[in-house]
Image (cartoon, rainbow, N blue to C red):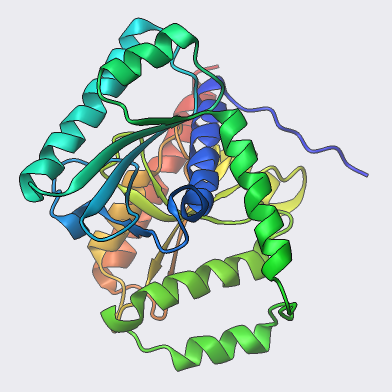
Length: 301
């Protein structure tokens, strides 16, 4: 049995930790805020420039702004940045909904000292959830799932996934259903050897949100080749439920997610149609850039 190779650059490992932690937190938000809580995109509530990790509405006219940190903030500067960040989001939301109940929530890996907890509370953070609390929430969620599970769904098959795809209409009306189906198809096709897809993961600035990212720990074959040659520790995927062909902007958007110091240099667009001429030309340009970077790197020795 081969042993997975988890070697990765420090920055890449920290970013992967952040991405996977965001995915875990998203899965448990209904258990943190209540099963009827709605997870909203910032644009849904009118925030255009600011991109908190999550906005959750537990009930009508009530909002929780959630920031997730994959590392424990142990310095005064980091605590100050977090407190100010949540305050900025809260003030912007308050302008849009003056009478709403707005909470500032921080979820972290690790645990804070009593002094740091006091600082955050004194600076307006209403709720702080650390690893120990998240673990208890996860255990409670698991128990609830066991109690309520009455039937076991059959595993997905190629035929069932194709039938589901045929029932969906291209365009905005079935966009969310299509995106969910693409996640199931990716898992059916590639997992294992890849890890399960994580959806709606933002980049560090929060401006760009990838439809899916998949961690790549493959130690042999095609995926290992991509990982070693193109730094593809993380595979980035965009799902496009378009009525027509993929255009240039979709290629540029995906290329914007890729970097040799971030998610790597390999991404996929999943679509009903191929690309038009402008997309094909643009697609070749990032490929040429990757090739040139590899050549420059080798010539540097």
